[in-house]
Amino acid sequence: MSSINEFTSSPFSLDGKKGLVLGLANEHSIAWGCVHAAQKQGADIVATCLNNKARSYVEPLTEPLGVELVTCNVEETGAMQQLVTSAVEKLGHLDFVIHSIAWAPLEDLHANVTDTSSEGFARAMEVSCHSFATLAKLCTPHMPHGGSLLTMSYLGANGVVPHYGLMGPVKAALESLVRYMALELGGKGIRVHAVSPGPILTRAASGIESFDELMQHNIAKSPLGRLVRLEEIAHLSTFLCTDASSGMTGQTIYVDAGCHAVA
Image (cartoon, rainbow, N blue to C red):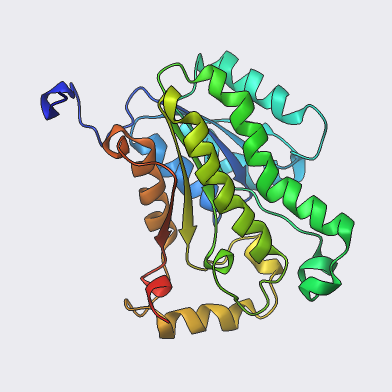
C-alpha cells in the first residue's frame, strides 16, 4: 500500500525531470509558457520551433534559460525521429513530452467543413493529431520511469464553435486519441492527457476568422468573466507532468475560466 511518505521531495516539483516541448513560435505560445513554468520547477528541457524564421523569435526566450532549441517540422520525413534522438542524447531519458502544435491550410480552415479539400483535411489531421501518436511511439522507449504525454485541444472538439471549422473534427480525433493512448501506455506508467485552454491570442489562433469576437464571447460567457491567462495554462500543464498527478490519465482537462461548463 502506497503512502505519502514515499515522496522524498515535493510531488509538485519537476526537479531532475527531463522534458521535450514542441511548438514554440513566440512569447505568446502555449509551448513557451510550458517551457518557462517547467524550467522554473527544475526541469531540464529541449524545446522545438518550426524553422529558422521562428528561431529568431524564440531563441531570445530560451537562451537565457539554458533551454536547448531545435527546429522540427513534423511534416518532414524523419524529422521527429531526429528530434527525439537529439533530445535523448542531450537529456539521457524523457519524463514528459508536451505536444503543442496545430495547423491547417488557411483556405481549408476558412472554408465550411463540407467544402474542405481532402488534402487539406489530411494535412491538418497529420500535423495536429497523428503527429502526437508518432511522437509517443518515438518517445516512450526513452521513458523508463513512466511519465506524462500532453497535447493541446479546444472546446470546439466537443461542440460547434463558429469559425473553428476543420479544426473541430481534428481536435475531436485528438481527444479520442488521448484516451486510446492512455489505455495502451498505462501499463508502462505513462499518463496521457489533453489540456483544453480557452482562447488566447497565439500565432495558431490568429488564423481563425473573427477570433476577436470569439474572445469577447468567452469573456461574457465564462463564470470568471475573463479569458484564461498563458501562465494558468502552463501551470496546469506543469502539474500534469509532476508526480502529483500520478493517479490521473486519459482526460481532457479544461482551463478556460469555466467557459466549458456554461451552455
